[in-house]
Length: 105
Image 1: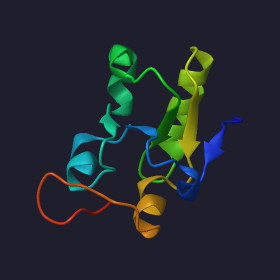
Image 2: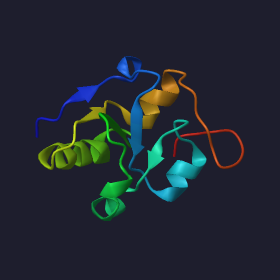
Image 3: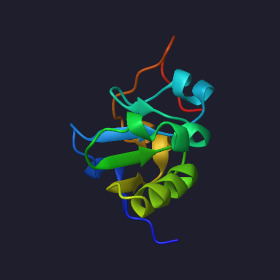
Image 4: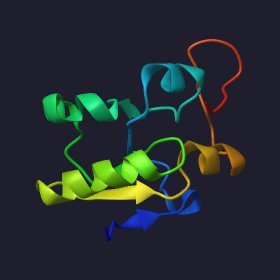
């Protein structure tokens, strides 16, 4: 599967980020301003996607790669975030959480 990808350091500050992790993962820590649509719910929630280039993220890059391939095959402009939220956190990018200090599950 040839999926376009970017590193965390190449994501612009104003990028549209779609987080496809499960609710507990999102609650523990996510990129501020990201849109949360779990991978299993994506097909039914496509109308919630921003109308712009999408940066798709999960925990490590596996789920988001599959979602990126699906989106691109269906007319969206999407790229996978290499290394996912693990790389995001390791790079010191800002994170938010539902409660407590943000972490990547």
